[in-house]
Amino acid sequence: MDRKLKVFQYGAGKMSVYTMRYVYEKGAEIVGAVDINPSVIGKDIGEIIGSENKGIIVSDAKDARSVLEQTRPDIVIVTTMSLIKDVQESLLLCAELGINAITTCEEAFFPMNSNPNLTKKIDELAKKNNCTITGSGYQDIYWGQLISSISGSTQKITKIKGSSSYNVEDYGIALAKAHGAGLTLEDFEKEVASVDNISDSQRQEIIEKGEYLPSYMWNVNGWLAEKLGLKVTSQTQKCIPQTHSEDIFSSTLNMTVKAGDATGMSAVVTTNTEEGIVIESECIGKVYSKEEYDKNIWTVEGEPNTTIVVEKPATVELTCATIVNRLPDVVNAKAGYLPTERIGELNFKIKPLNEYVK
Image 1: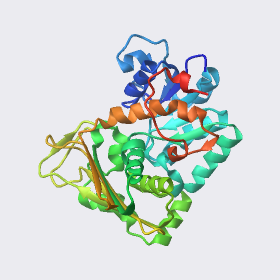
Image 2: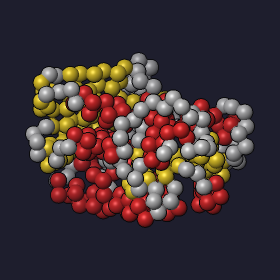
Image 3: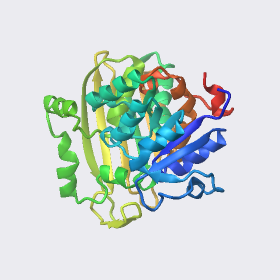
Image 4: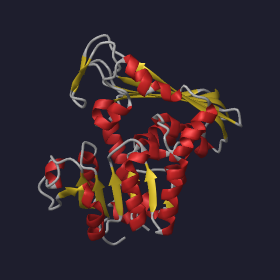
């Protein structure tokens, strides 16, 4: 491509501070931005990312269609919600207009195992209008590509076991609430944990209706199984509340989480496969106390056993850098809804992004 890559920012909150800055630093440009928050609507995006004015004003998200039609970006970055049903409006709009899109929505990483009918709807519309829709972020490398690479150096695998923790304070109110942060244990059981106290057939029925609430690892296990060529025979999920012995103030929730109440949750997903390999992954998302920090631990068990530990990863920055480095890959990909395991390995982009576009 002999011009700068044109990027549109859908959602001008915490994550966009990094995605928009990284877009400029990678030699691309932001051509438009929208949000629903009155406090950012009308602002120049330069004010949001801490730079000089860029001449791009954040518009109201209700005007997204007209702004997208006017700006005609090469790709849209969606950094809003965590469930695909909550970002479907933006993704379907992009698919309808024939504009590529990539989202930090965690379920969008592999939504075909949690909301297959909506995924199919987006896929068919994207194919019809020749664009690519995908989900990416921190999990693309640290829960996905890194694990598949380790597996590639293993002779025999019996089990893949992973655990990752993150501070929900870093990702906004939607994610914090999705993790049950601030709920009493009684309310956590009713609103979060009870969702998975069901049979496999009941869960599948809910999935088909598009009403399932997957933890992040639910979709990651599906991505890994697909990447490794494994056939899933069963998958279960259990959500366990996390607590702290002292009160913790959450700036994101704007409340004090009382000692003994849920600061967040641990979600454990167990996937059995026809090949006999078990994938057991756990994500721990909560409001951190002062002594806690992010950690990512994965073990591939078999011959040989291999464990990799990443301590204190900058998950927000890594998420956003992954999204921006993925932009040319998405533009180059075939049309449809494609999980990143079908788009190819993610590599560092040293040159301006447009130079990677075919």
